[in-house]
Length: 614
Image 1 (cartoon, rainbow, N blue to C red):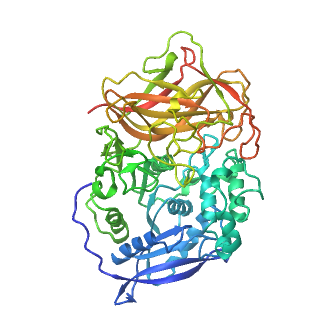
Image 2 (image 1 turned 45 degrees about the horizontal axis):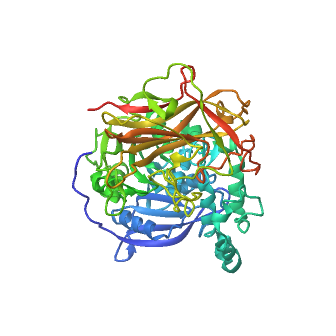
């Protein structure tokens, strides 16, 4: 991306008209704040291009209002709308599934306004990206461009709500937190809100699955209904193929306007972001662009993720030529105003390659992992070589395939004592889950950890396979796949996989540092089909594939590449009771003896996208 001068300062004042109601096809009215270019306190006559953000988190939140003031000052009408059933909008709130039709109808309403010139761009983070993808699935005629950040489900069954058949419990913490802001809670602060605030979510996580009418959400039935319904849909049925939950089922009619898909490696939507880019960049005129940073969810202006520091070079404001607002403004000016941005012919992909830092502990007690931005022509990288690292007896991981026959590595998985989640690609998880990169060691910070707070690698139910110290740097950039040969004493169980960058011992980290990069899970009954699960026969060996979230990391010379295998990652995912039943509906749990094979006939492996040096 070429360097250009920053755009001129704001040339307009801002006039805000609040709670302007737009009528949807079913008669429900949704509230919007309309921020119009103004002079001396009065809206400027005439029509302008419009920027729209639809959000369930309050259209009047300070950060959104500040963004709107910036864009409006540059000659846009900026419209912030509360989603159905949230804040000032009418109707009942059902997460995700109303946003396609409501978005389409909102764009039709915008087209009728005298201050709209017929061109609408959309923008927003997280749920405000989901709302964009949902309306884009219906291809509204006056949509002109989109900037989707950290959201916009490619397939919520595969990542974002469920993952490998398991349920992402951040949906639980999200529902609990947002119920506090629901109309029911706001209208009845002395009973409903007070009852919600009195609940200890930590205690409730020991009482799963939750029962309808006997959960901490029972005072807000809409939120309880949403959570228990989405948790109950265990197979990839029609529920998951709805607009708003599965863009890939609607790619054919998905809008082909210019669009930017922006995400990050420690974000639960990294796969959604890259999957949408891969599909839409091939199918649509666009252009379609991709930006992938090292952050946690939406933390584009923060230089660290969890306990890991990437340096000032990592944030958008310092290294994508312009601060974030002006970066987006340049995009909108090009596609809504026809102002060329000097970007023609530049690569459509930017990725941040993590790693290569000093490895020291900084003044904030974070690991200096480092990294750098790089421009690319495509994703996945054509030059990346799919390289198998084989699991071998004795905890070895090697590019040399195993020879001969060996006993499998086995462990006892007790679903009543799951492996605790130590960081990772999480959002909306507080106060139960903490996102980002961490040394894979239990501590009081992480839910489910127990004294004496030893490394996860010491647990008997965690299998550890790692390379010898690397003789040279190894960069892995792209999707990561784990292929295992497994057996279990149970009819169903989970297998988890976690890719780890292992630092050698140092003065700052005498025991080394095991940094989590990406992970995944597979519920074994879904090994062949998401629609028609098949139970296992105890003792029979099966092949299965675990899709980890994409990543980009430089494993520095002297480090080790490590793969951890287990059967739980809680509270990130619900815990399989090993009975074949949906753990969202059944509280029955039995232990399982699980085995991973690693011999010549059954070569379990992790496949890394290794980028050649130079």
